[in-house]
Each structure stands twice: as C-alpha cells, then as structure tokens.
Amino acid sequence: MPSLRDYRDRITSVKSTRKITSAMKMVAASKLRRAQEQAEEAQPYANAMAEMMARVAANVVITQASSPLLAGTGSDNRHLLIIMTSDRGLCGGFNANLVKTARAKISELKGAGKEVFVVCVGRKGRDVLKRELGGNIWESFTDMVGKKRVEYAQVAKVSEYVLERFEAGDFDVCTLIYNEFKSVLSQTPTVQQLIPFSADDAQQDNKAEEKTSAEPYSPYDFEPTEEEILTELLPRNIGVQIFRALLDSAAGEQAARMTAMDNATRNAGEMINDLTLQYNRARQAAITKELIEIISGAEAV
Amino acid sequence: MSINFELVSPEEKLVSEPVYMAVIPGITGEMGVGKDHASFVVALQAGVVKLFASEGDKAPRKIFIAGGFADITGENCTVLAEQAVNVNELDKKAVEQELKDLNEDLGRAADDTERKRVQKAIKLVNAKLTAVTE
Image 1 (spheres, each protein chain N blue to C red):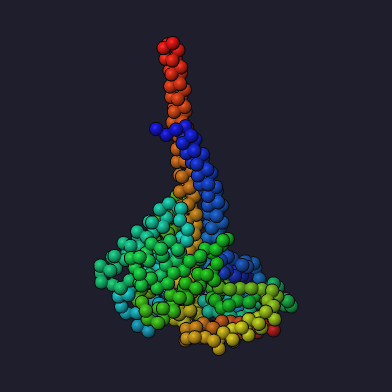
Image 2 (tube, each protein chain N blue to C red):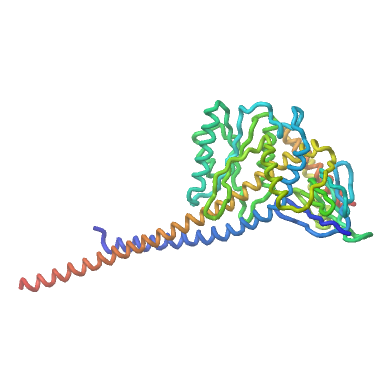
C-alpha cells in the first residue's frame, strides 16, 4: 500500500502537469487565432486565382499540345504524393489520422500497380513514413510554418521543387494530402489532385462564384492567348494550392492541439480529485489504526 | 470616373482603392486601364504598376511587382502578384549589390537547373533595377 507521502508526491506531479497542459492550451488558442487571421488574409488571392483559372480554362480546349500540367503526361503510372503534417506533436490524432489516410492511398495505388513517391512537408509525417518508404521519399521540407506566420517564399520552394521534378519527367500525377480545417473541433484529412489540373474543381468554383457575384460575365479578351496565360497560370496555381493547404494545416494543427490539451487538462483535474480522495482515505485509515492501537494498549493494562 | 484597383499577394490584400487609371506592365507591353475598359485577362511581366489618382496626376504611386496576372472588367482591375513592393522603398544600392551577388552565383552554378534558377532571379533583379533607375 502506497504511503501518504507517495500520494502527496503524485498529486504534486499531476498538478504541475495540469499547469503545463493548460498553458499549452492557451498558447495554442492564441496561435490558432493568428493562423485563422492569416488564412482569411490569403483568401482574396486564392479566390481571384480560382476565378481566373476557371475563366481561362473554360476557353481552352484540352489537346495533346496543351501543357502537360493540364493534359497530363499521357500515363499515370508514377504518382507523387505530397504529405503535409505538422512539425510538432502533442496535437491529438492530427498527424496519426493524416498518415492513416496517406497509407491507405499509398497501398491503393500500389495495389493498382503504380509506383509511388513521396514528398513530406512537416517533420512528423517524415519520421513515421521514413521507415516503411525509405528511398521513395524524395525530399522533406520542415519548419515551413514560421514562428509567426507562414511565408509564401517558403512554400514556393516546395512548388518549385515539385515543378522541376515534373519537368524532368520524374512522375505523372501529383496529389496533395493535407488536413482541411473544417472547424476548431474537426480537421479532415483531404486528398486533392494537383497535377494534372482537373477542370472539374475549377468549374465548381466557377458556379459558386456566379451565385455570389452579381456582376454579369462579359466576354473576355486574353493577352497573350488563352493557352499562354494558362501555361503561366498553372504552375502558380500549384503554389497557391500548396500555400492554402499549408495555412489550413497550420490552423488545424493549433486547433487539434488546443482540443487535445483541453482534454488533458480536464483529465489531470479528475486524476487530482481521485488521488486527493485516496490520500484522505489513507490518512483517515492511519489515524483510525493509531487510535485502535492506543485503546487496545490501554485495555491491556 | 474611377476604377476599383486591387493588388493582392498570396499572403494578403495589399492595395484596394479607386484610381483614375492604372498602368500595368503586360507581357506584350504596358497598358493603361480606366473605367469601362474592355474585359481582359492579362499576363504581367516584372515591372512597375503606376496608379494615377486623378486625371493628369503628376506623381503616380509606383509599385514594383515580380510578374503576375491582371483581371480587368469595366469596374474592377485586380492584379495578382507574388511579390510587390513600393518603388520608393527600394534601395538602388541594395538592388545593385543583389545583382552582383547573383552574377557571382551564376558563375558557381553546378548544374542546369541551378543555372536556370539563378538566371530567372537575375532577370527579376534587372527589372527591379530598371524600376529604381526610372
């Protein structure tokens, strides 16, 4: 049976753990607010880009001569997955869920006889996947999310790397797997195809756009031609998509950490209550025992 | 008689104001955009965007952009640029130094992809230098 002192030590230790988790929760909450603000600031560019893509894509007929970013390379045997996790842990199932989705996608592709390569964004995903994928991880980018904000220049490194490998003909299809920020309580692992650009997504955006904007659509002129603009737009669009995903992922990470730390703080509280109860019981038992000893000693005399 | 001009970068909306005319550096040449301009989608090269607040504005606001796109309708002119900086915030000496460093990098470039990347950067800094000298 643990002594009174053991109980006291346990209680002190759990109390200090609770202090830490509750501080982490506060920090995550303030970081979450900042991440959400940044995601809002980035919205106009992403929207304008999506609108422009839709306008231009609607005027272009996909042919063999089109940019491979749009038309594809003509085969889909080699897949590149960009797997976006966080750099730090202690955020509940945030990374585990994402890696699970990524594993499912990888085995699905491998089952269909495709080759799979991976680019990791974020330390956690790299650490977990390194062992099972080994040399198929081409590159890992870490510390993408800065202390204060996500810098676009950082993201451009990823998109440039991907585009260089694509131009070198190293893969056919590129897919991005990231945690979409639905709400503070829910982040959903999402699989999004980046290369070749799928016009369906753009058309959906376009429909949403038509509903919201009252401005009538007039016929557009293009300078230079639609094809040339599209050739310029497509690589940049990849950068924007990765940037948007990273912002979502950064906000989601903080939200997940906040929820996880809130739970941890509550669990620590419950544990302290239980331990205090046991401590009091043990103390009472000790007192009773001493009394019995004294009384029976007195009776014996 | 004004048009709503917007300049957005991936990180935030930088400018949003009504202007009399905006001159933007299209790939095929500069173009002035005023109210009721025909609808256009234009690819932009690295250069200077000039914003004229009123007709005959002698000192237009100048913003350097590293290429991008413009979406023009009769009412709005939206410029998407990955990098944008006010021309009067650019330091000529710093830009010249940057160019020098890049030229050294070019000499040291190990392979073709590296060389291509540096050449791209040099082109950009050259445009920046023209913007400052103008």
